[in-house]
Image 1 (cartoon, rainbow, N blue to C red):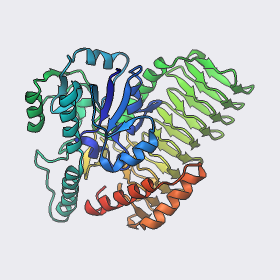
Image 2 (cartoon, rainbow, N blue to C red; image 1 turned 90 degrees about the vertical axis):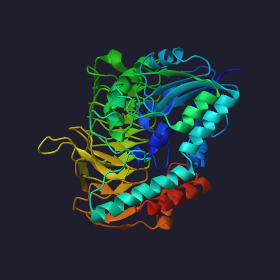
Image 3 (tube, rainbow, N blue to C red; image 1 turned 45 degrees about the vertical axis):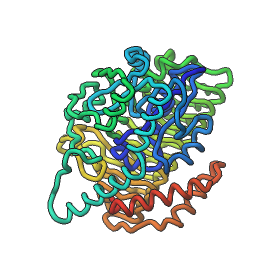
Length: 478
């Protein structure tokens, strides 16, 4: 029987709010796909599954109907942390270090494990508890506490809370991205007990990488796209590709164009610094310039005279125009018009109005501060734009400051620059924001989905309601 490969969330899911409010961290887009698919595709004939927060399970089944969701493993199981990012050959090398009935750790985090039967079941129960309702309630209490603290005096979180107190570049958390964790955090006692109960072998992996913050997804995207290109079985142009006269391709060996894709006259595809992939059914309209690494998803449209620059990854069924630099667009999102979006992560079902812009560099060139898991943090990054949650919208000519975070299902408009953190379900302009009515928010979302022939399900209603409730419980600090 083939092994069961189970990708799991851990307690760091809150670090990726708001883009992880309505989906698991491993569903976040990077490179040509998402974190989960990059891991699962390494296994041939394996049975894929996931462990996620229970309130996400119904919509997770809609997103990936062919995998098991929150089911107890049986038999041989390979567990993989959904924040794990591996490049060519690294995952298999990591797994070779782990013996049967073994667990691989880095500091206080599990990277991977090879378990069977009772040991696998106990570990799965442990994971589900760590991301379960009790943990979420504790998280809400702490996020609400941040709001209270701001009204009195600045207060740092004590070690041992579910949130992370530090995100400075060079801290043990940030170093997960470069594989140099200081091992400052220790394994939880409950996990230690499970390890001892089943006599698990413990292997340490100093070289492993975990993404700990959303800005790391943005900065890793270029390297991931180059790695994803090496995995592609196909190079060049499909027989059904339509390439008009006047298209210029630089380093054509680094360009892949899918079936029924269309590239109009005057387009420049410059893959001299990284690969360019135009997926099936995508359209690149006249006089656009793409500078690799760039990925354009299935049935997406790049509007005329657009500038799509290095490190940009566009999901399926998007419409993108203007200037975009180093940005990830998840599926079904639109930025059709002129305006600049740089070094940003834009969620699914987003619409960015004409002439909207974000800053991605401070005038004094200092590191950007950004809201993360309840408080403003120094990211250590000089270039960082915005994080925009799913189903959010902006009006025309909206401007965003460096390091802005926009929550889930927001409607932001007006000429006044808004605050750097806009809570989920916000409606308004500048600093004048009110709570977006839940019923109206869902009505709009249903219209948007059905325009793309996706049926609004009861699970969508339940998810929106849950996130709205979480926002209120957290003192509107998500």
